[in-house]
Image 1 (cartoon, rainbow, N blue to C red):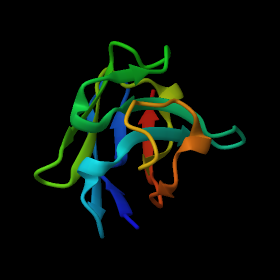
Image 2 (cartoon, rainbow, N blue to C red):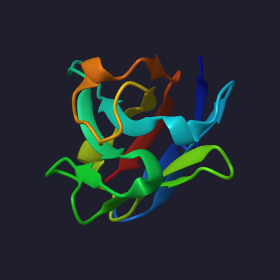
Image 3 (cartoon, rainbow, N blue to C red):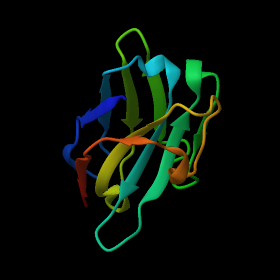
Image 4 (cartoon, rainbow, N blue to C red):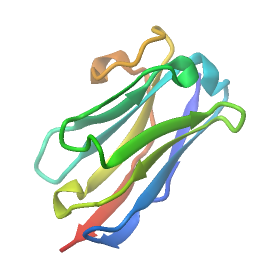
Amino acid sequence: QVQLVESGGGLVQAGGSLRLSCAASGRALTTYIVGWFRQAPGKEREFVATISRGGYNTYYADSVKGRFTISRDDAKNTAYLQMNSLKPEDTAVYYCAAAGRITTASMKPSIYEYWGQGTQVTVSS
């Protein structure tokens, strides 16, 4: 099994940036695809971004395309979500997730076997 721990969340003004990290332990992250999801109060968890094994493919939700960038550093066993031009509607708890059953990136939460505990991102207007 792999354990995931997110960090880097916080309070930022609209237009600002944050970089979330997802540190993996227990197994090498290189054998997993990684996804980022978020959940705002009163809303369902939604897909944000995903990256394939090796980082060859990435996909983004339309709402974050052009503003967020997902990446991975397998040597550090860590994945990242760089968030720029943040908007108040980006406010949510952000979760990273990992899946070992497939190699291609996936937007489906059901694909992911392992989840972190989440990190809060709050964007003030």
